[in-house]
Image (cartoon, rainbow, N blue to C red; front, side, top):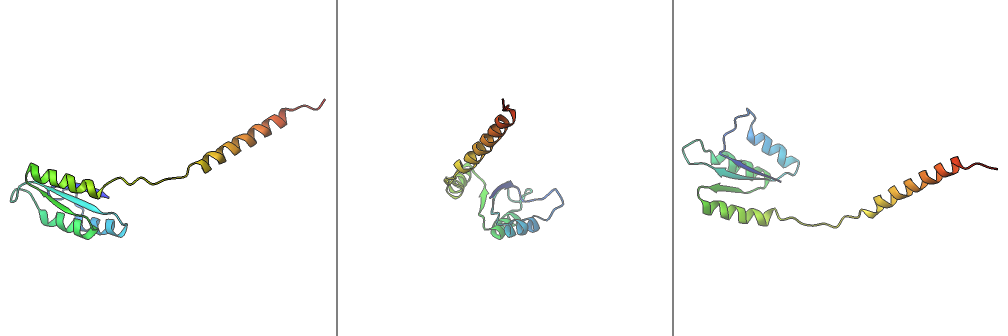
Amino acid sequence: MIVLFSHGHDNSGNDPLEIADQAARRGVRIHTIGVGTHGHNFDDDVLKQVADRTGGRYYPIFSAGDLRDAHRDLGRVIALRPRPTEVSGMLSLAAAVLLCLSLGTAFSRRRVV
């Protein structure tokens, strides 16, 4: 997931809609936040299309209230979801490898009298 703050104009020479299509094919959702003033270097149509193509949402920001609302909504969308992950298997494998190395070293240094 990507949160994009922009005025909607691209300076890099890349096509934002093509990039949005690539992101959508990879399952990346883009939420766009439009910052600017209508008529003054602000293109909300592109930001809406990027969000629509990727399954994201578009948030136009023209006031502090708009920003607060976008932040609250994105907080619900981008909530962290803890997932249990089993890590003891890898630790057990590492311990077994170290034990084997230790036993091998001890056996090779042992002298028969």
